[in-house]
Image (cartoon, rainbow, N blue to C red; front, side, top):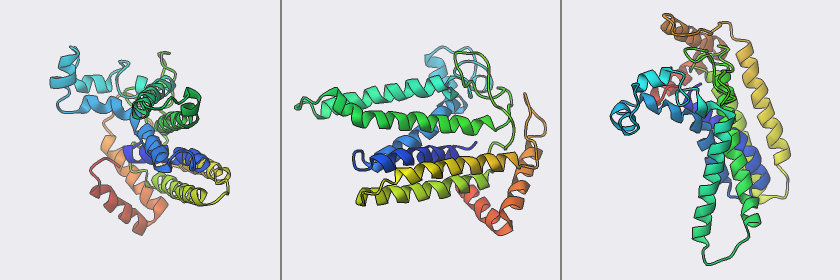
Length: 268
């Protein structure tokens, strides 16, 4: 899936914890961490950077070019280690350690027990991990391509997913479902900050409805986008995904989303 939808997915799952902890942890911080978690797995796409070979490749003495790495099955290739449960857990732990060190430096004049930090740090850790896993879940339903899915259970060598239920991008319907649910939950976060009402009991079902909506849309696609290796029908499949969006959304809404798509600087 595209990066923007991944980021919104991370914010969606983080909004549940933000609703439940809005008076303990600033909601913008939780939502920002969720967005970061949603984007994090695609850090492995850095190998497509035009200066990758002259910088990172040279520093680490890599024997393969960035494009070869991206399309390969090295642990650091796209859809490799960084798209795994282990990577989400480890990266979240590292982020938590860095946050704790920063917390200690800011409060070096105060002796604060670790248990008190844990009360605020643990929810943030869970938000980041959940954002990462939301990203990976979105990639499970995309084409297998050269990878065969995502290396979900690293260090196990097998790949999961790659079902090809949806195209890489042009999933405007899913974006709208996720965005609508996320906006509702952000509104619930605002309500939670000014009332005693526990909005988390509503925010969680909203995320479940988002999940059901996304998987329903994936299951009712009229085109099977699954392919393995490289394909000569890449352009044709992308055009089919656009026509399918026009069928689902109607001409007017599709054109509005298409204009928005072209306005963005990232694939959407």
